[in-house]
Amino acid sequence: LAHVEALAAGAEHTRLEIGLLRLRVAAAAGPGGRQRLPESIRRIEGAIARAEALTLHAEAAAGWEILAFAQQQSSDIVRTQEATLAAQRATRRADAATHCQQLANSGRCLVEIEADPLRGRALLDEAMHLADELELKVMELEWGHGLLARAEGDLTGACAALTRAVALAHAVDNHWRAYECMVWLATAEFERSHLDEVERLAAEVMLAATRMGEPQAPFVHARAVLARLRRGERDAEAALWIDVEALRALDDKAHLAYVLNEAAALALAACRMDEAMKCADEALLAAQAVRRDSEIGVAMARRAMAERDPQRAADALAQIPPTAARHARAQGALESAQRAISTLASTAAS
Image 1 (cartoon, one colour):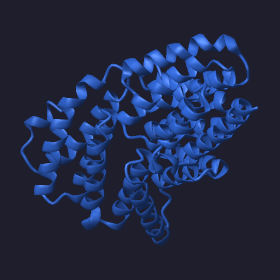
Image 2 (spheres, rainbow, N blue to C red):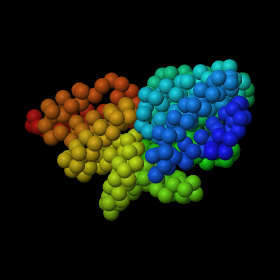
Image 3 (spheres, rainbow, N blue to C red):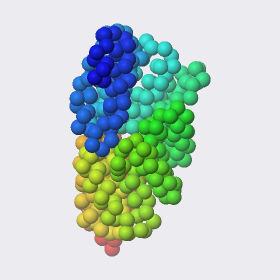
Image 4 (spheres, rainbow, N blue to C red):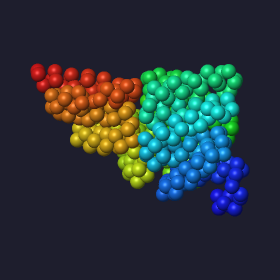
């Protein structure tokens, strides 16, 4: 990047700068690198402005895409959404293949961060039709379809699509995308209780993280630990709280909310209501900070289940906003809570 500054202003300067900034942001996504993101964000914005001034539509879109990724790493969901949609708009005048790729990327991102899932679905549908016309295989499209299937409760379909996304990422040596898709695949496998597969995927992701210079991957390691705990291996509890502390240190609120919600579920199953309440409370705060509706719904449902008084539990359940119950994961937690509270009320009445 320092050498790029010595080049004359123009198209080549801008192309090189945006390509190098992509590498910087990917590197900064790992532990210890996030402090470099604010500086990178300012430079990305400048590079985007230069690309747009030179009518370099594909490069401008690439700039918006990496800006969205950087904002997502900084847990700024509003700006992530804005940059994602700007990337999609930037490719309207680019070639069809570039436009197709960006439609898929923007749609996947909106579904993943739960900012605007309906618009995300529409963009993915548009990308799918264009990919069919162009006979393209698009990794982001499979990734997005996997996330949509999971949101709808089709975990088998989600795992199939995410497996295809991983294969497409490997086919073009896109290690970072393969890594991210495997994290989602491990999550979907965990949710359908394929615990051996969760541990296998977690080991593969952690090995990939080491190769990419990322010394820890608590978000995926925690999935493997949760799989062990679900099997009844109580000696894994200490490892879970180490991962939770690492997620707090990384300020990774989305993954922290998920892990704490699963910790709350385990505590509820063991009738440790105070622990369940504490986990659900922290999960709710983390999920609200990044506007992750699915985890908000799960946290509120599990918090209600931890109430010992049936009326207070029912009141807590009634406060769950409709938007937080649209995701199949949250809907399942809500239904479980309704059954548990009904049983609690019947026991109290008798």
